[in-house]
Length: 329
Ligand code: NAI
Image (tube, rainbow, N blue to C red; front, top):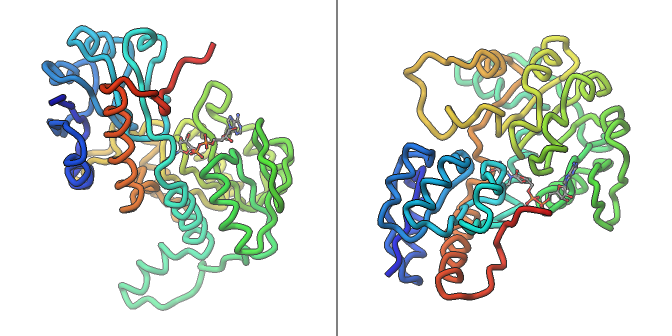
């Protein structure tokens, strides 16, 4: 029986992986710690590691895992920007779950856009105190408005389907456009200039880091709603904060944040927040932050568990690794 060291475990991970575990011959050691160069030693004696979005798979961590005999890491997520592929190359195979529920993320993105536009977060707080005033809660119809979608892969497409259902006009930016009706591909500048809502659905790469920055924000419509359910570093957070303070950005829905690793998924309510930009963003009446939860549906968690374990089963049984991520070039 092969043993897996499972990092950054939360109760919902354990529940879904234990449900699927019976189908495969694996023993799983669930650790609450995040994977990094210090915690890598906990994998001693294991045959594989399972990691998540806020684990650190940098060169020192991968060196240590390799030294412990680990030759495969199953990422239980789609993104892999936290993996140093140069350090993994020819030593540790990196497997992932390319899609577990694009609908989960797309629905969360639209949920945030609706919440911010119609100020549902503020209405919720008001009525709990029997404050039934509508002042300051005015939104705008999504119907007929233009929405800019950056990245039209699996999640972007699911999001576009939802937007089309609302009767929105879709502008998209993606270096690899998808052939489909109802979507107009444009340059990023045009998308920024013409969209009332902008939603990010591209991966974090060297080309997309800070794709939303002071320059792109300057081109946006006043009052634009910006939604990020992809990766925090797609947005220059300080530029976003300035855009909000200048009333250029009408609202921001952030499921991800560039420095989220130290905070997200943890209860930090009894600590002093050390990240001034995050604290300031959270203090804004027109910003909603969720803790990288867009994926969190029962369907997605079930698929993540199934595909992660099947990837590792395929590795240990010499089968083709359809979900392996390799360094390009
Ligand atoms: P995908 O690989 O199906 O689609 C990504 C799209 O982005 C592709 O069409 C690609 O051509 C496009 N793209 C690449 N470079 C670009 C650029 N420079 N500008 C614009 N578009 C570009 O990926 P999928 O499944 O749609 O996921 C998208 C992202 O969502 C992931 O990379 C991940 O970061 C994020 N994600 C977030 C989750 C959450 O819980 N918040 C859960 C799952 C994914």
